[in-house]
Amino acid sequence: MVTGYRVQVLAVERVERLLRSVCGALDEAGLAYAVVGGNAVALWVSTVDAEAVRATKDVDLLVRRPDLQRIVEAARPLGLVSEEVLGIHMLVEREHPSPRSGVHLVIAGEKIRPHYRYPAPQPEAHSRIDGVAVLELQKLLEMKLQAFRDIDRVHVRDLLRLGLIDPSWRERLPEDLAARLDDILARPE
Image (cartoon, rainbow, N blue to C red):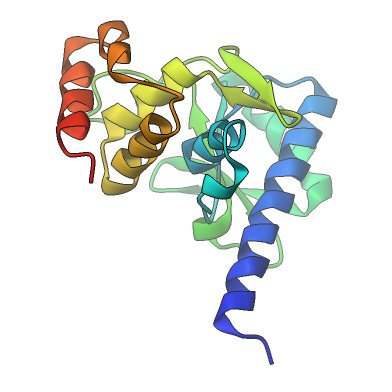
C-alpha cells in the first residue's frame, strides 16, 4: 500500500528526474536556459542547507523564443511534447499530459504576465549549481519580488533566513521591488 507520504516522495523524485533530464537534453543540444521558480530557489538554498530545501511540483525554465522549436526537439526523446495553455509554453509527458506537473517555459525578454512591469531576464545570467544552469540570484530575487505571490514571499524569506540575500540587497533593486523586499523584511513570519 502506497501511503500519502510515499506519494509525496515519489512526486518530488519525479520532478527531480524531470529537471535533470530536460536540463541534460538542453545542455547536450547546446541550448541556453536557466532554471527559475521554485527549483531555482531550491538549488540556491541547497548551497547553504540541503535540509531547508522546499519541494515543488513542476519545472520552470527560462529560454529564448527563437530556441523553442529546438527545445521541443531536444525534449521529444524524453517522452515530452509541446503544449500551450493560456499563452504559456510548456513541455508535458506524452502519456500523462498534465500542465500542473510539466516544464513551463518562461520566455526571456518578455513579460510573464501582462501586468508585470519588467520582462523576464536572459538565460545567460546564470550560475551552475549541481550540474544545471540556475538563474543568478539577483535576477531570481527580482522575478520573485515581481510575482509576489504567497509562495514567492516564502521563497524570498528562505533566501533571507539562510543569508543568501540580506537587507542590503534592496539597494540593488528598482524602487518598486525594493519596497516589496521591505514589506517582507517587516513581516519575517
